[in-house]
Image (cartoon, rainbow, N blue to C red; front, side):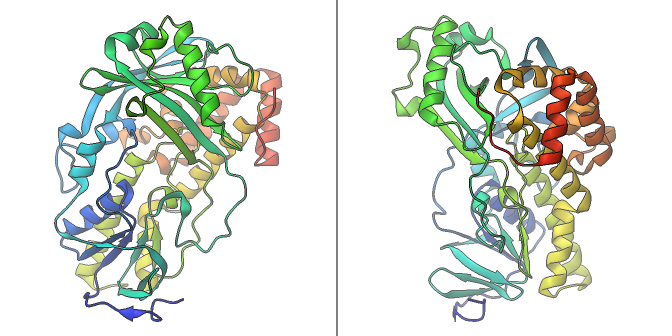
Length: 424
């Protein structure tokens, strides 16, 4: 159904209609509203509370000034991160864990009109809800997440997923496991189980609480959550915790994570731009997307505000094309595809050799490692997702640090593309 097939609402034609009320959708809506644009956000459950734990590199957050700056309280805790592969590595950049409730509150803007509903179709004239209601709009943003509700691409079969099970404990209990460090990745198989390798992710949440999470970085299909819970319990026991100190049976202290990391490119209809995980902005090697969504929101808002002022390119297709270039142009797509190839390599590695692969990665000089992780761009800019040269340098540097056997696996993964996770 096209956007002219439903019945009309009484809404005036807004500059932007956002489909989806998660961090990416609200970041874009807020940024545009703060530049004087008329914005409508549509979500099936606009009053729901966000529950995921979000992390990013601290300097990537828009803080300190400008219309999109976030207040200091959105950062629940921050510290220098550590990674353990076959050796221990101190990461130079500070890692920040966000206060999810504070982030949701900060991204809300009273200048955004909020409608309860689900966008089912969109085009150059606006959108149509699932109930047939027509919503005119100069531009539609698909912020529906990995489901890509407005993409015309065929849905893939089994997806490569990041899965994790975490438990929240007090800081003193966590220190028995982490030594008081913020642990970005700990690949040591302390759980004692064979199979696809998983790592410990241990981050402070603020208020004396710490999340200890057993994480499967990527696997097709995703590693089952019950298996991850068993591994986490075994890991924490091996580190010296008693069963009474591991509240995995208390839902109030447990976090479950499951999301795809190989979302296909968004095939956007005329008049539609994709944001967040729908774009896709999820980093295939880390699962991060929030900081990039915040940066994309600023670029989108600046572009739309400029075009509105100049009255240039205000047709739906022209506006959408400019918006797509702003949030993720050609170089960004190249970098993302390179990172996807890195995911293919990981999925084809023999399980026992995954920690050795990450040993090579964390042994890289800071600049190429940062570029690949997305923590900064060249000369301290925030455009690491566009930095093709540094991404190539990172991948080449990893290659030179690997054994001949791992180099062969890297070549196979690069040439053969998507594959299943290898069995032990």
